[in-house]
Length: 348
Image (cartoon, rainbow, N blue to C red; front, top):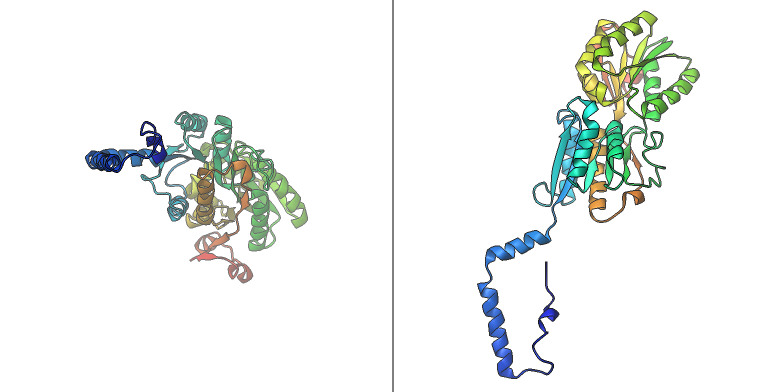
């Protein structure tokens, strides 16, 4: 709330008051200002400063913690400080993906100003919950293919953000896996039917596999309880390697997947680097701290009045290849030197 000085003119008369009248009025205003309580001034200032509520829909604070910290840092650099002018409403699925719709609807009921949904499945839940509240994704696998935006240049609607373009990165990952394993003739692909971006990625992989002369074994996995059966099927079909498409279901179990691959002596390629760090052979994917940091700019622009429909979707620009040489040794594989020199990180 604020007042314009002109509002106080009513009732003071139409002609210029006498000098004595002016002095009396000035003294009265000064006296009133001096007696106005300091706490009331503070209260008015607080009312004038809006605190925005950001809903954050994600699996767990332990998934990509460095990326989440980078997102917060990006906001701080833009002047958005938690507890001062923004507050976060976190909703964690904790591996219970059947709860996503309820968690997204809870954020809508709270009337948050923005919902941040880092990846595809969370964006899908947010899309079902609202068509009015802006939704920002930070590492969407395929926003166009999944129908979450009309196009990258003109997203339309209330959803926008950054994409990792899984249909392209998964093809690159397959190419790298073939280079790493001499004579590779067949590759098993683990994917989740509940992840909207996996179908477009599979189609892109099928085209690439024909060009590379590789046979694909497609294995749909819906629950963590199916991991062991999937690897048993891979071993039975004698696939020479495993490509795991990125999704929260798999991201929540990097160590379990790495151990199953080691048990069957299977070379693996993942998206997030956490999988290679946990014992997977390789990972190739976007630098998520970078994409999350850039996502803060979308929050900033939308809170300043820009419509999501007018903010083009940006693509990830930094990617990272990680190779775990300890795992290569454990499964009896020698990584070509030409590939090692191209790796961003080598775990020895």
